[in-house]
Image 1 (cartoon, rainbow, N blue to C red):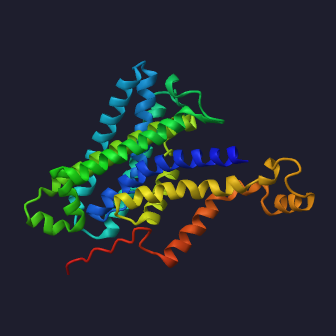
Image 2 (image 1 turned 120 degrees about the vertical axis):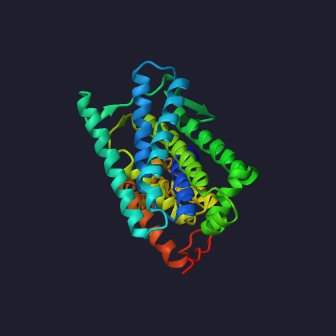
Image 3 (image 1 turned 90 degrees about the vertical axis):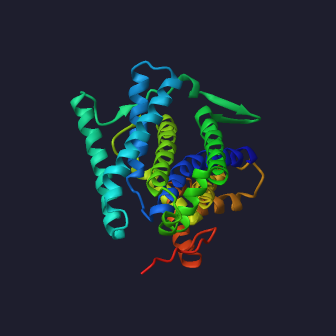
Length: 324
């Protein structure tokens, strides 16, 4: 039984790392612009498609990763420059609707390009051989891509933390997140700061898209919807607008998702004779194997309780006061 639960912990850490890469990008943009960028999930989708096309073209993995990162960052910067910068400082609902519009443009544009190229809506992702197979950790067998997802997420989050806390541009981003108008009055180049935030968020989304597509084994233009929804939930749990809160919330979400799976069918993995037949039957009724299919409902129930009792999230950041 111990091996079973360790397996679930490994799954939670892998999922939490992917959610963290997405949630941190959402939190960065929201922290500076107070924009919930729902098109962020479509940047992840763009990254997955760029990775697929690069690998289909026969590029080696390092070149494919560079192409994926560069292409996704360019799309993110164009998104900021064309769609968001002209309405910066406008009503929040205008920016929110713009993010939905940008997402639809990216989805339908990808769908159109796929059809013009004679590709089906859903295509198989050419996972690199390096990420195939499993890794034996003691008695556990963990897919290589899950191990890579965990370590990639941790390394990138550490590097981002060092960038935000140790560099002048990172400190400027932190100041802009605290009070954008005041930061501008202090001489901080806001356009540069915002563009940097979008570039970093887009790069993280590209990495998440590559790893998510490798795990899923297939991609389509609507790939980013579920991950961005999970990232949004993670950011809310951790405290929206906080980078560290988003990371904490992402790993918390990863563990929340595996709780129903870990409990489901627990009676089936109990060693024979470890409990009485009556207790075994009771566990089978209370924790049926179908419980795992309700993991999303479990997460949303937790989210509602979080909003009721701690609406500012785990780290509890205070809301920024707007100047009248």
